Amino acid sequence: MIKNIIIKKTFLENKYKNINDKIILGFWIYIISDCILFASLFSVYIVLMNNKLEYLLIENIFNFKKIFIETLTLLLSALTYGLAMSKIEFNSINNIKNMIKWLFITFLLGFFFLIIEFNELVNLIKNNLGPNYNAYMSSFFSILVTHGLHVFFGLIWILIIIIQINKYGLTLINKTRLICLSLFWHFLDIIWICVFTIIYFLSYIK
Image (cartoon, rainbow, N blue to C red; front, side):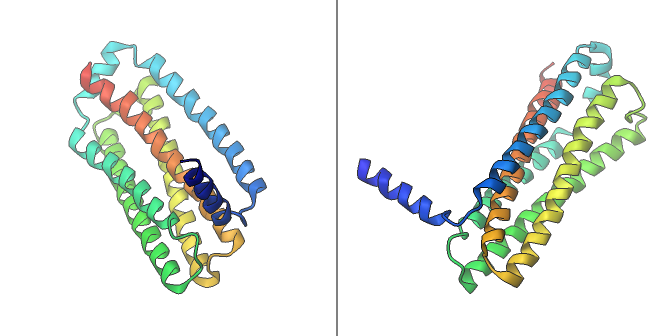
């Protein structure tokens, strides 16, 4: 068992031996700052949702079928990105092609997620439940729009990294960028799970 652990540790060290640790550490600091941002937004939302009249007013307009598909889509994109990251070790043509394939699938899933989320917000505004309706809706929109913008910039990042990998291959800087993007993308998945649990699931069970 100890031998297997040592072998696995050695494999991981060889796999990521050329990664720029300072850049990744800096990106972790950014992720922590984003955690503080979303924690603040969720705290405000939880306080405001205690107003039962305003809370019950909007719970019936959520399309939980679409929300479930939306959630499944984003979680699936985490899986496809993980499959892309599994190709990070070897800088061969076939390996790069497979990585680009999974990255592009991740992009498509993320784009589909954004379309569903955008339609949901537009539907709320059409029903006169936009961010100006009350403090609760303002908090609701703040969380979803902030998360949506993060996903949007994540999609741009994916396209940029696809172009860079296709042009330069799995260089040191591209490997480092892939790991940072992986941290960012999985962070967005975790935030969405919080959104699903705190906003949608609680509105369903109340």
